[in-house]
Length: 76
Picture 1 (tube, rainbow, N blue to C red):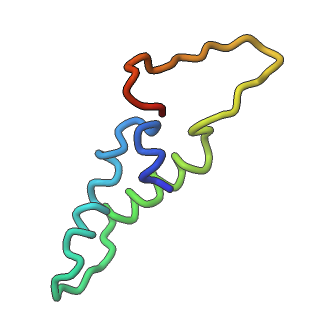
Picture 2: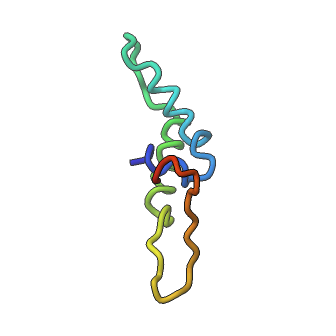
């Protein structure tokens, strides 16, 4: 889920860097332990994904703007 929302969370790469570094050890015969940085990163990411509206449905009773990609290449 976090990977999908990464573009909507400010400083996502900075937040998850300790987790990314920990996962790079996967496959190696190294005991992986959670350090304080990784625990803080996980808690911060959990907060960003659950406590604040990351994406929100529009309120159809109010005016809103829709921005589209006019590249004629893909639909997103």
